[in-house]
Amino acid sequence: MSRKRRHNALGRAERSAQNGSRAREAILEAVRRAGAPFAPLPSIVGATDMGTGEALTARFMASAQAASATVRIVEAGGVEAAVREAFPGAASVASASPAWGFEQADPAAEASALARLDVLVCPGAFGVAENGAVWLAESGMGSRVAPFLAQHLVLALDHSAIVPDMHAACDRLETFGEGYGAFVAGPSKTADIEQTLVIGAHGPRSLTVLLT
Image (cartoon, rainbow, N blue to C red; front, top):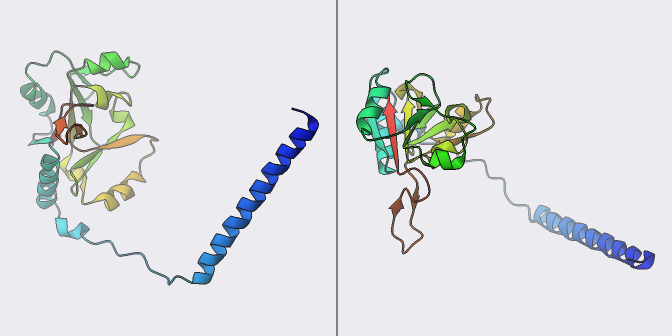
């Protein structure tokens, strides 16, 4: 490109940027002149309506089951036995936690190997009664993709770690120092094809939540 053409191109770019800046300022000034009335943020309601203790646990179970998850209450030391009972024919069961006697999930495993995993057992950080979701922190996954590639996902969750709603869940997240995690609610679902609901098409075929 010649010096003259380059100079003209830079000039057009500068004029375009200036025009865009003037247009933006004109829009903002029009908004300021409109003087929209101040509207306070709405108050958060409903969190206390879910109760505490057993009532909160019951609400979580109902929400999780509505999302097609299976929920069972087990003893604190009964997670391993419950998993083997629920999946008696599983050839491969892995976990990201050393608390159970399963094979340890390999953080460096190839995606193809994780997709052949029958059952992945992960510790859930906390649950949300409002929608039955469980927060799964990265440290409990084994690898970031493992919970989404295993055939069946099992989350062990302390029933005392259930919060009422997503407002409380976001407050809880502020105490986590990890940079990645996911809310998991039910197995994967899609209804893109002929509006027919298909479960497990692009992720775990089932989700089981074991409440301890």
